[in-house]
Each structure stands twice: as structure tokens, then as C-alpha cells.
Length: 558
Image 1 (tube, rainbow, N blue to C red):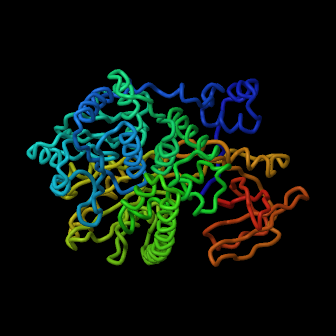
Image 2 (cartoon, rainbow, N blue to C red):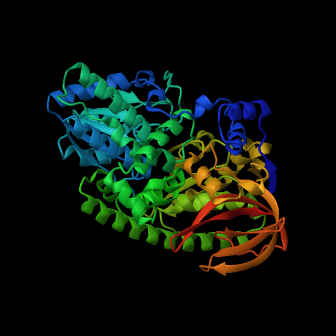
């Protein structure tokens, strides 16, 4: 792995400093192609208008007609954090608007992902007049066809990339569909649903439906959680959405379920960060969909009673602990596979009969980080005859497009697939695993550009000693970081004075540079460091026995 420094335009850095941006932040933001302080001025008024999102106004009319007529609405959710938060936003907003609404989540182990014909049959038992998909549906051609046969209308809200055929729904809202001019193609599923609710409120306002108009800003903490947890690129509009949600959480005005999840992770609400959403609340919420039923996660997010929310959060926290134990066992097995395979860095597909279907996505992410190449991990599906795979990619390789290439070359090999550039899922026959692995790895060789193959880690360069402080760490944590807008990573050479294993899986380090000592941690790694090393590290706040101090979290060393 080679450490390289992110380039930046000096004129942009100077412009940011001149506009009052902290000098360190100015350098970091310039390296992320921020050219003006206006791009960092997050305010609700600065969000893109709902009218720009194709289908949003049509969806608002459809929903308003159903609400006014007292019809039954049923949200079809997904079993990840994005789907759960999108469902919760829909449930809360529609109830504010006086709608008769409920939700249904598919059992991932029996019905799989999305609005399948089988799920439509289950939904039909509730006698809905309108099905509303969140974070799914754009590929549900057969499911929507079955709903149409049963006389049930369908509204699709999704953000995944459309296939060659669109479902025959009454309305589709998806920033990635053809003809949609919405400036942010990176909206998460929860962001799409939030925009539909904004459009619906405007439509109901025209119809003089409200005695007192609901405040949809109250839902931005859920939008922020889903956006960060789904690892969509944090473009300007998404950062603005996250900023609005963090503002509410820090002010103590978050939804009871989300605040309970953060408390379960031991976080201070007044200092909630994007890291807390992605690595504390997100995994706890996702644990329900991975190991049990995401209905528990959604119930947590829509609970108004704080005691009920706390009980749900505690149950989710226990599930997350179980998920971690399963993940550790799977990762150990996968790493053992690598030891036994010659030229292991060329391997892109992994499978074990013992792996848990709900955890292979996390495993793929861990393996991708270790191999620095796209990885798909498979587990046996509930039917025993098929495998479900979850993949994670690296910058420069569009994973869904790669799967599409394989599907076109080998008709029928992939039973179903979908996803994004960086993450995708698929189903294949168990007997086709070896064939798929060969074809997928061949497609990777063709599509993976040379720069994506280079094992490099981008840093923000050296951090002056005067900035290695608790105040700087707090300042950085308060900013918004995430996919395509990475948290600052610095690079300096230190003397390693002391190192010891803590918690069985981590290294605690004492470093020194220019006569100054500083504490550091190397999480999830036991490889001893040399006496002198060039470290890529993040500045972090360490809290122990109520006392806070600055700490370096080491990501890599040379």
C-alpha cells in the first residue's frame, strides 16, 4: 500500500481561508474540490426543490387523492437502514397528514428483496388500495404486474439504478430514472421518500387540508441516518440533508428511537457526528434486518413513547452484538481461505456453507478493504438450492454494471441482481458458483482500470503539531464526512515507543515526534509496528472515565 497526498488547488484553499474557514479545514475542503464557502453553508432553504425530482408532484397528487378518500396505504419497506428510515419517514409524515397507513417488510430469508409477486400476495391480505415502495421497487416488474392484476395501485420510490424494463406502476420517483433532471443523483432511498413527502405537503396545502401544517424538518434526523448508513456519496445536497438532521439531534430534538440507539452506543447526543450515524446507530438498526426482522428497527424509529423506543433499542443492541460475533467468525474463516489459495489477491468471490446470509455484505466490505479489489461473498439461501451474494467495490469499478456484463454474457446465470456502483446484491444457483466466479473475475479484469488496481491510500498530508489537539479533533468530528467526502486522514512519521495488545484484537500505541508524546490506537490489527513508522491516521477524541483526550487512530503504516 502506497500513501499519497490528496492534491488541492491553492487558490481554492486561499479563498476558503479568506471567507473565514479554519485554515486546516480550508486545506481539507480544497482537497475535496470545495471552491467556495457557500458550498459549506448548510440551510434547509438551500436544498434542491422537490419539483425538480421527476414524478414527485405526480406522486403527491396520487397520495393526496388516496388520503382525502380515506383509502388504505401500505408501505413496502426494505430490510436495511436506508429502507427502515425511509419507511419511518413515510409512516410518520403520512400519519401527520391524516393518512390510513401501515407498513410491511419482506422476510429477507424467505421472500428476498423488493416487491416480489409473493410479497404482493402477502400484502393483498391487508386489502391496501395503494402500495408505496421505499428503497426498492425499480426492478419489481413482476411484482407490480401482480399488484395490477389484483387491482392494487403502486407508487415506486427508489434510488437504485433502473434496468432495461420499468415496472408498470402508477408513478415512479427515482432520481436515476431516464428523464429526471434532479441535480443530485446520489439521493438515498430515505432522501427520495422525504422529497415525496415535501411534495405531498405542498399538494395538501393547496387543497387546504391542514388546520396546522406539519413540520417535516422533524424527520431530518431519520433522513440523515439513512443517508449516511447507506453509504451514498455525500454531494452538497446530501451533506445539507445530513447537516439538518445532526442539528436536530445535537439540540435534543431527535426522534425517540434514534436517540435511544445513540444512547445504547454510549454516545453524547449534544456531540452527535456523522460517524455516530454510520458506525453506532446504523449498525444497530441494520442488525435487525441482518439477523431477525427489520420490523423491530422500524418500530424503534416510529415509536413516540420513550420507554418503548428504549426497549427496541436495547433489543437492537443485543442483535448487533450477536452480529459482531458472527462476523468475526466468518472473517476468520475467509482469511484462512486466503492463506490456502495461491495468488489470493486475484480472488474476488468467496463462499462457505456456514456463512450467514444477513452478514455476507459486511464480510464483503471487510475483504474488499484487505484485498483492495471488488469482492462478492455468498451464503446459502433458505431454499438450499441457491446462493445469495453481496458485493462491495472500490472506486473506479461500477459493481452493478459489472454484474450486468456477466448477466448479458451468460443468460440465466444470475437469477436477479441490483444495486449501486459501490454495493450490489445477487442470487445464483448453488451449482453455478464456480462458473459465476470465473466469469465475474474475468469481467473484473476487463473493467477494473489501472488506477483502481494501484494499492494507494489517499491522505491529507502532514498535520502540524499545533493541530494535534483535543480542540482540533472535536472540530473535525463536528463536520460532515462520509462516502466520496472522506473523513480527514493525515500522514506523519513517528517513533513507536511502546505497543501492547488490548481487548484481544487491538494495538495500543505510545508514539513520539519532535519530543512530544501522543497516544494512538490501531483497531482490529495485531501486527507489531517497527520502532519508526510512517503512519496514516485520523485525529479522534478518546473518552475514558469521563475524561476526554486526543488520540490518533492508525489506519495504515509504512
